[in-house]
Image (cartoon, rainbow, N blue to C red; front, side):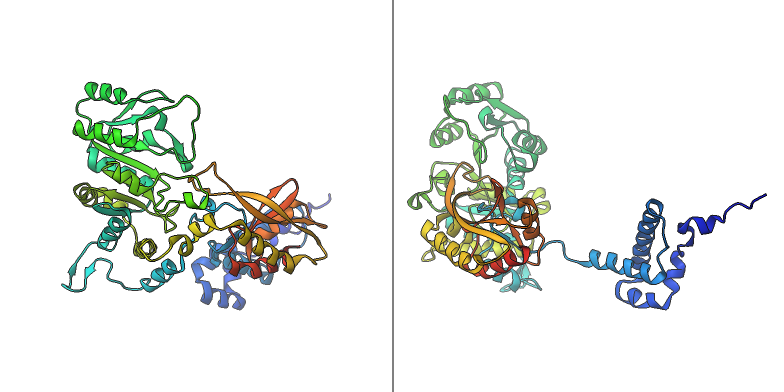
Length: 467
């Protein structure tokens, strides 16, 4: 009778060493010292699991302890690498949500560095007593908007939530049906109203709302305290539409003892009309029209860090600042510093369209963009692996601000002799310098409106390496 084959010899997985044996090997000591024994054991278990799966599908020689330690080291080093790093935005979308929205001005970046250690975030250095972090922003927000006061939290959705919770305080909130929008990330106006503890009262039709609709809603719900007006941001409705003028709505609200709160979203503080850009609703204009609280983003048209800003009447701003939600939604010290530095760039004699990157990109003339494209073209035109040309393009403001606005631009058009457009775009995204472009008609386009002069040289090097 023939003896059964040796199971251990026939299944190489049985010859894999135990985790303990690998950790006891002297060669494991440097990994333990560098990463710690707990992390090393976890990485080795992952390496052993990968080896078992590989041997099950493709039987062969079991890896040695040295090979398993090398695999564990690769796993540990991959886990220690940064996952958030700078990229070159060559998409032509100025306020790109997936790329962090507004790039900060150098002044804002310097302000963040200056307070990265200890700072007087909540300390009055004159008296030595505790103060509020909002003290660094209140007067600045009031100064640049014309409001009585201002407060900032971590984003605009948070500002809407806080404003309704503090001002409506559970009472009904009246909103036009044409403004019950959903924007990025599933942010829906009805959901935010509900989360604030208030009940939503819808008025008007989807395309037309009149003052009489608000009046009827108020007669049915006399305990209502707030009318919420929402700028549609990335949604547009055209045709047979109408809504009350903002000053008329403010007059109506005040005549009936209501507060008018407006969510502007993008929050423009400068008139871009002289630069050929259709007028976006401005914070100052809303306040002059009689809005009690205007809410807007810090990292869109303002050009600062992520923040939600409320500007308006002093008593209402104080109510927001004192509400328990304000602590849960508050800005950290780096964002406070960056926002304050950005707001100062709106003070005369500074020209924010030259000092704030978002505004500079939105207003930059095509001739300047074309000159930048020519400079880049000169550095990559002779690369043997690419066909390179220049192409007129259209970029966009992005970020829910002026979504329909097309911005004339100039792009480098790349076609590889070796790679598909998708592969070339991937190589640009994953190189040592990460570059984001877009593909149109099987050509990789790198739009120069959203590339700075300082990025031209590293962009050229990245193109050469990717090709």
